[in-house]
Every structure is written in structure tokens, then in C-alpha cells.
Image 1 (cartoon, helix red, strand yellow):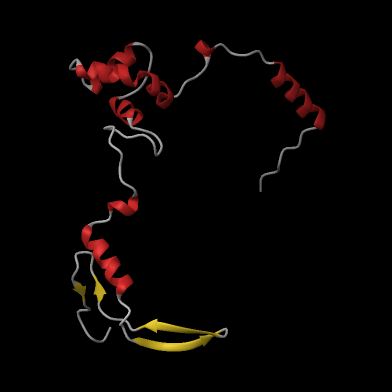
Image 2 (cartoon, one colour):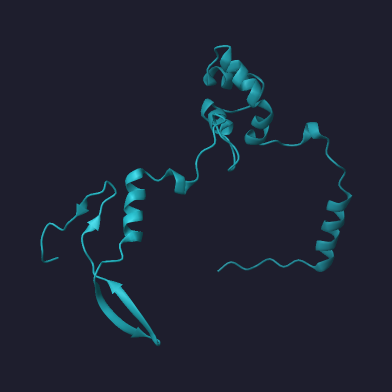
Length: 152
């Protein structure tokens, strides 16, 4: 079992003072992730692609300048971030709006089906509950899914 290392409070305070005393690093010396750099480079990469260069050729160009990145890395970094971003400038519909027509119809028919018989009525903590009788399962394409055998 590993033993937790313990340091004195004065050691932590000296370390804290040393961190506070560090000078500000110039922007030119700060590390930048590929994704963050691509925010600024996106237009330039797209312009190079419009000139006929592939992502492989662009990655080779980056490697000539000391950036060890691949075409896949550039492709991934060019992807939009967050909910607001979109690759083609076209907003995507919300997940509920993306449901297919058959799924919507199935959901609506389930919501409107008030005539189905109930199987069990029981008391649960003073509340009466009615459970709908189980029937065939409705598939996403609108047809019933029935078991292969009766004795499942």
C-alpha cells in the first residue's frame, strides 16, 4: 500500500510564494493546443484547401515549421466546437425535431391511446394505479413486433 507523502506547511507556503513571484510569460512563449491554434488558422487552412492543397500537404507544411501534426489532427481540430458551431453554417434541428415521421406517429398514437384495457389495478401507498395491458410492441417503422413463439 503506498504511503501518502507529507510536507510541512512552510514548504507549501514557500512554493506558493515562488508561484506568485513568477513573471508573466510573453504570448509568443505560451503553449497553444492544436484546437486553440486552429481557431485562428481555420481560415488559412480552408484557403489553402481552396487553392487545391490537401490536408496531407498542409500537415507536411506544418511539419516543416516544427509542428508535429497529421492531416487527421488538422481535420479533427477543424471540426466545430460546442452547440453553437456548425460545419456548413446550417443549424441542426434539436434532437426531438430530428425524430422520423414514423417515430412521431408512434409516439402520438401511444399518447392518444386511452381505450386500451387495464390489466392490474392495485393500491400502492394509498394510491390506485392502473397498468395498461401489454400488447404487441410497436416497431419504429410502424408495424407490430410479435414474439416468435407463444411460450416465452
